[in-house]
Length: 287
Image 1: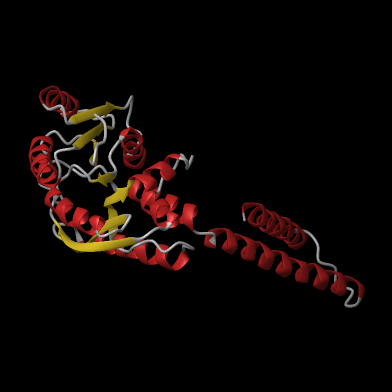
Image 2 (image 1 turned 60 degrees about the vertical axis):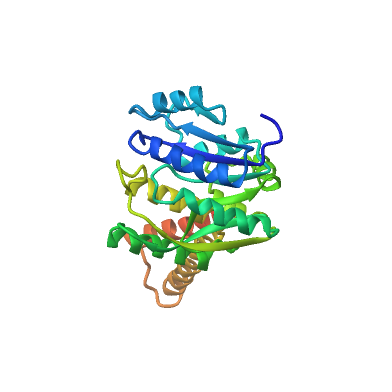
């Protein structure tokens, strides 16, 4: 397929109960926008019947394509693989859990047609999410907003439409631990948003348990903030100066007060000083 106007990238991980409804809603929405579109499913090592369903859709619909990854690489790398394979002048990223309504793509595209290169969907409400998930998500976005050097939209996932030039630039970014919403924000260009109410997951379980959420949050903070490095540097400097002060006091005590500090105290002073210098050095190297 050449001269594709719209590509839709959909990462799939154990979503067999959602795929058919997602396909029907995506096809209907995309066909209302343009006849020149493609839907790319990326099977990210699913252990259920997802791959077979995707293959069946691809066999009966020439606008459906799929990638089958050799194992579960994670959401961000699955999306990246889909972006690499996409051909559209505009590319939509959407999850398969139906929490992000496919019909919203029409509104995203309308804004895109106004001249914006990135239009992302901001979650005004998160229906069905637990209080814990809402609290931790809000905390993460707040920390990221305060620590990051890049203005990353709050309460915004990867559901968005982006220009082909953004996709081409993302292809040139070699990071293995991807944080796409941060990378897209860092690239700049004209960006705007529309608000929506995120729906409750209809079927299946989330592919983002607490452990993956923490790992994703760490990737975001370490990729787009130098605050952790600065904290390490300052901590190392403080420990070094504190232990150096104790060393000066120990010397003063020995020569002027005639009270020698021996044994455990001297060992602690030495280890604190060395540890502080190491932290300080690691912070400098990291920055």
